[in-house]
Structures are given as structure tokens and as C-alpha cells.
Image (cartoon, rainbow, N blue to C red):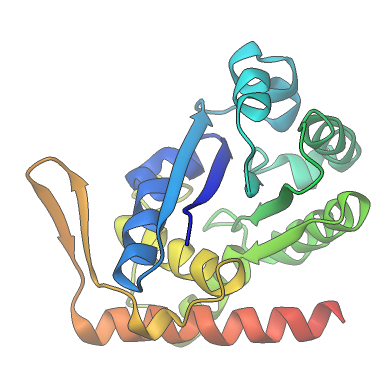
Length: 223
């Protein structure tokens, strides 16, 4: 079976802890081969990516199976109409009719948990407009924090993901988009040459189970 080709477009929520390669490694542990690429820049929106030549070239240079788009974290709250317009315009630059749009539904800032529902609604609306799949990272984070507040998903800046936050996000992607059972995924990730993340089995199990449950519930919610 040929490798699935995935392009990630986003900002620091995507490049923190090298999420694209984390997804690749976890899928590999379940027997699936992925080719991943990414165009990311800190603090940037989908509108910025639409005008960025590197992003446009990346979108058009391959016959991608999935193009994953992640909006700037607060734009779904502050400027949802711009999110819809630029997300739709950017995806329309893809050259293959077979490519599947995927939206990376991110989490609320730690000090603004009440905004998660509005973030969810904005991503759901954009998904409707471009017939995209969604992987609900934010709702999975919400579930873990409600049940296991001792598991720290946030970086100390209270916005970006910790390594555990990125691992949970990757689990959700594998469950929602690749249809892999998160509970068979590796808990050992190479972050950098010579550096590895090894998650305690008990913690990994909580994150894996949350990814699986949230994915199922979110699919039911969207019906």
C-alpha cells in the first residue's frame, strides 16, 4: 500500500513538538506509512498562508491525500468571517479533486476555557463550507482537563501545547482522520535527534482513551 501524503498548514500550534512528525511516528507504530510535510510560521493565520508563496507552492506541488489547516488560535473568536473566507480560498488552490481538507480544531487558551464552544462552532461552519473533516483536538483537551486536571497539556505560556498536549492532539488525528485505534499507538516519540518523549503508560492510556472517546462523540454530534 502506498504511503498517505499529508500537508500541514498552520502556525506554532502545529510546529510545537513537531506535531506532523509525531503523527507520522505514531501511525508507523500502528503499521501505517505516511509522508508528511508542513508549512508553518508562528502567529500566522490562514489568510497569511493564502498570500504566502511557499504555502501556495506546497499546496500545488503534490497530489496530497490530506491538507490539514490550522487557523490562528483566536481568529475563530475575533474574526470568524475572515477564517471562513481565507480557509475556503486556500483550499481552493489545491489542484487535485481527490484531496481531503482536514481542519485542526484547536483548544481554548487555558485562562479562557469558556471560549471552546465558540471555537468549535467556527471550525464546524468552515468544515461545512469546504466539505472538510475535523479532528477535534480542543474537545479532547477539554475532556482530559475536566477528568484529569493533573495532566498538564499546556506549555507554561498557557497557550501552546506541552509535549503531552501535542501527543493527545496526534492521538486525535490518528483516530479521527486515519481511523487508527489510539490505544495501540506508541508512547515513545523521537522529538529531536538524541531526544525522546516517553510517556508513562498510565498517562498515555488516559490520553489515548480520551482521543478515542472524543472522536466518537464528535462524529455523533455532527450527524
